[in-house]
Image 1 (tube, helix red, strand yellow):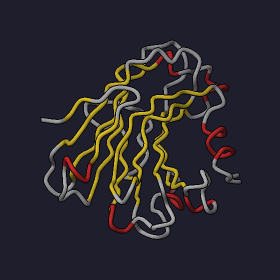
Image 2 (image 1 turned 135 degrees about the vertical axis):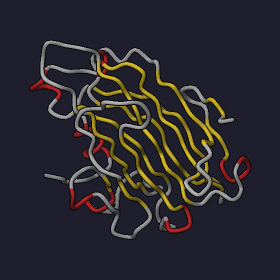
Image 3 (image 1 turned 180 degrees about the vertical axis):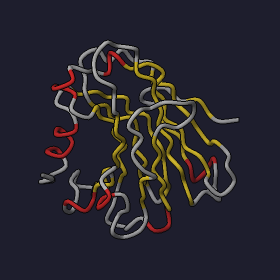
Length: 194
């Protein structure tokens, strides 16, 4: 049975799942029915150093074909889901823990609304958001968080972080939203993505 986490809680993966190496981070949501344009939410993963910055623009994995797989091979995005239709994960990101470069202190998982200002959409129009961490080799769900926060005006949300602490891997639910969209994370982590 998966461990249920809430905002601010973490799990020590090294202790709870010592054989864990290949991880699938599944992210899901349901867009409320509106009369406007369809929702297109996108998951991204930023690979961040202990200094709080990405080393360069290649340290972000997201839906664009050139960015689906990290150049060092540890992180990959399974592809863009433009509708969020159906049950289960809407988008997922795979991580092979033993391949994550030692220079990377944390992997930050963000979901943003594509063209949010133009479409006049916010996370206040999104229901049933969740993030789950799965042992990809066994299919076992290790932990999960249902993000029922009321993000009324935010256009991007940092769902969680996978990070190293004293040589151990941990997973923390962040659930922090921003109005500035994905651009906030691009700027905060020192990237120059066009």
